[in-house]
Image 1 (cartoon, rainbow, N blue to C red):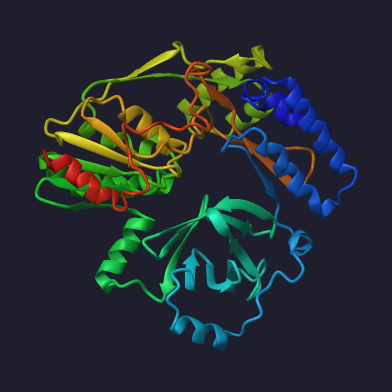
Image 2: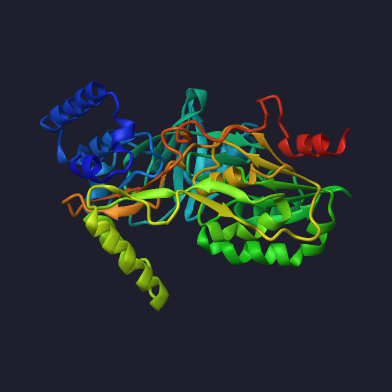
Length: 428
């Protein structure tokens, strides 16, 4: 509480109703007198949920004893491998089968009114076979158990019958396999897990960008270079950033010359100057120029501890992009409620182009506070991650928990967004 109240840039914005916050905090503190140590992580997460900021997270430091403590008694399925294999051989239920996400291989079976996702293979330090990884409940709700077995209440969505999305993870169905050829299946997997480019028709091409994380910078730039001629000559370009949870600006900066028609205008950010931020800035750069910049920032922050500091000389920035000589005539960006953080920043800036339209649903809404860093909360078992700056759009133009609105909203009756978009672009 002390860290949030003194070092979270959004604290005053998020607690304008002081009485509501005061009552919430007092009720939570009262619970601490009745709860056991095992309940600590749930109390911490209950507290940070109040602020509805996707950039605030509490991490439990991996500890074998903590994992054991968090395990729910009888949170297992009673089914043998042979019984499960026999069941899924003949199932027509789209959820039942074998699914994979990274190191997790799970089986899903129906049990009364819910579906149980149980471990088949995983890191044995944290999970054992048949332990329940998640429960799919009614109305798209799920109980999802994190690596330390603590509970995260999430939403889920089944897409195309073989891609299962949770808030921040996805599972691919391995068996029964979808009714696709091996080439189609592998192509689709590449689209889901990475970034890709392909021509859809003579006039329209699509650029899929599933992430802007730092490790995607080089692959994205390679795709742009390899397909430069096609991008420059196509009439229409679709950029799919659905489920893109963000990353770094460098991942998408080289796309702008093809989609912008003018310079991009925006407001900067202001950091909340704290000793924690100063310690973080010291680690940001490792070259001479960066260290010089860090020293200047630290000097500014030390002069105004506890205050908001704009590190730039101006409140407004103008991003002047050298436009490509040849580029698509029309650009559509597909975005949904899992387009977040830097994924939203891309949409926000691209939206200023006169030839760009946003199709889909409102984005996630996590763009008002950023540059998340780790904060010590005086307990070695937990780490707090939260933002260090707030956007200077505030309070006039908030995006958190609202999202960036599409130009054309795609309701649930639109099953194939890409087909809809091609028709939108090509049919007069």
